[in-house]
Amino acid sequence: MIDNALFDWDGTLVDSSEGILENLRYAIDSVGFPVPDEKTLRTFIGPSLVWAFTCVLGMDESTATQAISN
Image (tube, rainbow, N blue to C red; front, side, top):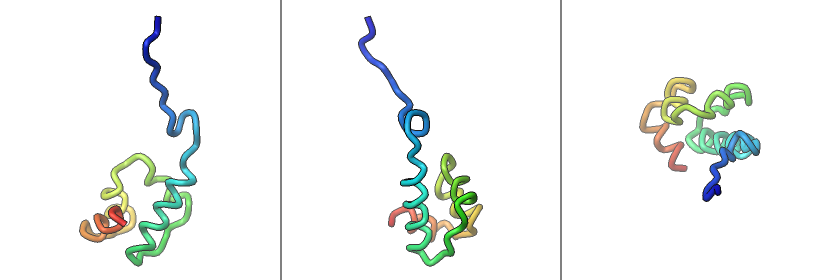
């Protein structure tokens, strides 16, 4: 008898990228950075946001942290 089942909902059963991308756009815009194209934004899904904001967009760590908290 199976007591529990585990589903990898996000990214497997549903595509939640639209909401993630919209939130990324908001966070980036909220700190005054130009919002990159969708192809670039999709590279942000998965890795650390601090890494993506600093390494891909060139934000300093303080600005990246502020974008994440917005």
